[in-house]
Image (cartoon, rainbow, N blue to C red; front, side):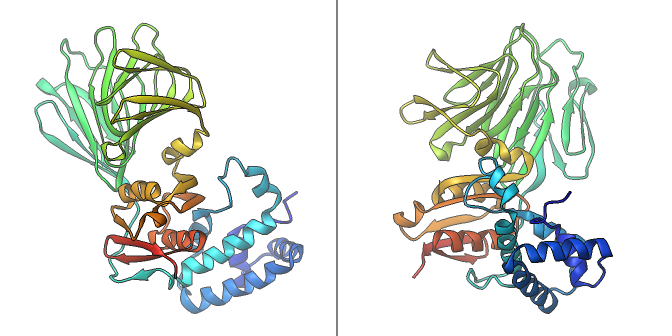
Length: 382
């Protein structure tokens, strides 16, 4: 039996358009009567949609409805609250949906250049220095030295085979800001690369180790091979594993590295010293001093980007800005230090409209945001 406090967006839309079936009308009435505020929000939703966006399709409404999972805490930790308190969450989502579809007036927009979320794109550099563009909905055959077939790019995943060659050949994949990409190495290891990242790796692994080099951020699902440990090198450290899932973030401008372990075990090596991690732990390395600390974390906060979401828990706006700059290709500027330390919590779809995202930040952190082309100014709300 469906939860009487929950209703699908398409049902609300069909009721509004007088297309609802008797069963949908029954569901709608049950939902409407479950909370005195639901009817008020529904009427406001309909009025605004009709006045401002009457050309929207059912798919558009469905997409916008599902874009934001917004709450006073992250989704995983408060899943039970969402499930059993939908009467509170749903009206909030309706209100936010109305804001998205009709009214972004709080966020000043000086220019109308559209700011879009990132897409699947990267550039592959072969051993001879030649470049191959990898983009959404394209398919490429990857040929290396002497015409050796080493991989294929399809379905937004670059997949390598075990090439029959007696020498080590390296490829490098670079993901720009506003991009992300997936690849499968020749041993079956799956890699997710985040925006503004670079990975150098052999097209086929030889010898006693499987070694690759990372700049930026990557999530690794390492194929188990007890005879050949898998090693990820950054400029300051290396992570040695045999079969595991972990996230490695190493952006130079962040002045730190974070290794977050989801499953298995890893050893982190700095200056010859090894520190072991257990699932649910994160190692943080300060680049200036090479000091390492380990803490327990909610791994979803650091891995959700691979599944199409951005999860934030009490994140200072200056840290949030770094992630958004890479994904939306924008530059953030803060009026003062106080503004940078205001915090945001929420679970956001990576497809979310940028202006809508900024309006959420405004309304939940009490700041004023001005967008001028691809420059974002954040000030205290007066």
